[in-house]
Length: 624
Image (cartoon, rainbow, N blue to C red):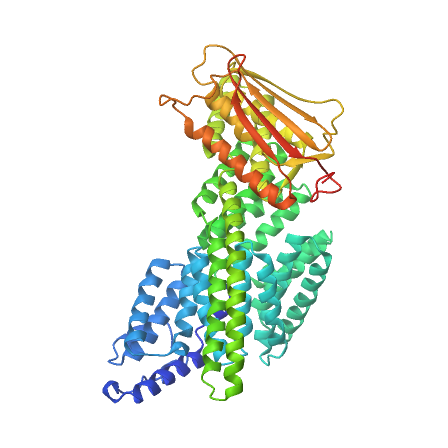
């Protein structure tokens, strides 16, 4: 957690009290004696300090006490109690008429409250308020920390370009800092950001930058004799060594960091270090040591009560156990992982975060215009008029562009939420459990678990992977239909073929574009029929496109009111319409599909037409 957002700075509290006191002096009706800061200056904090300050008759002293109390609850990860204290502090700040500068520490605490609750949009809202106040007073000491916190929020919501932008803004301010301990801490955080960018983009220059700032942080922390800073610097150096294949050096850095830690003072960092060490031993196939360190990591992560970290630890345990063939333990880990991930539900927060940044930038522009308008010189008024005209034009064009981007973003988010019916995963797991108890065939169970884990991985990774080869899509459909065959034994047969001349390993199609229709055939087309179902999937190409047909012999489409499942056909159609909408925008093509009843018998036939794309040219389709 950032020291900036856990700040209990004596200087900051006293300055804010002076600010409030000066404001009260300007309003005689509210005049009162100022709060005595001597206890704070002498380092008196904690619950005893809170109790004494709450007993004061001065609202300013009480407000400081509630902030201190909120910080205590923050350290204890008690979000509800922290929120109650912040509401009390806010009530007192507003009643005393304090300005924005007086709210800075309050905004920091409120941002941390929303961070504990994984509410990243609201965390950004209050952090932007902090940034605005710091920029207004040109507070160069705290500005870099604010930029880094905003960078981290954008990183957590997948908006990496904005994250890089705010990270770079912080560096000139860090270089000028006189406080060596603060400089080392911020260099370490910059190193962490660039390590994140390296993991995202696999660009070696980001890894070099990570090493440069981590080395700076480590050297300064040794001069300052600060164990906490050394721990973080060692941790960053471990990541650099690991990605350069220097496993022994990576373990050395982890052990150096652990030597500085204690379970009472650094449980979160110990969780991270043990997790990294477990992953290193997993890569070395020393699974006993890997599981031991993974369990230690999970123990400390559970103390932190941060769901995302606990879920990542279960993912590590799943990998360790599945690689050993311990499928029972692997299945338990993946069930725990999925349960936690489903509970987080922050898929829609990225759009809200982007909207808040837009409002922040607009607010800054409006403030600039108001300040210029206050000038009385005629030439400045003419400049303002010109700027207003240009701003209106830019704002109009920008709004049109934002509406278009918003539609695309909403479509992509809707697709991410509808990649595959979640009931399939739970029903498939139940079927695998029944199969294990019924068949007592370890090899078959292992094979089916492998198929299921591959389906789950492909489903999760499809949100980052736009295109796959036809061969990969055929393999995915084979595994998906085979898992469905376990759920509905002897209910249907299937066949997946491609034209002999089709280069299935070299031609690309959008990932998971066929699965919704196959799901409809199995789940609803074969529901209630008295004959054996059959699905036929066929791939072929003509001069400029790929043609795919999906045909079944189920009960077909029904348009009358007695149809039990019209929403499922509609769901599949809408998913494909959304995919084609985005595909045609990106590639400037006219991909299409149709779905109709078979006129010569029972069932449905789906025909899909896609642009011809090859691996060596994934963006521009062939012959377009």
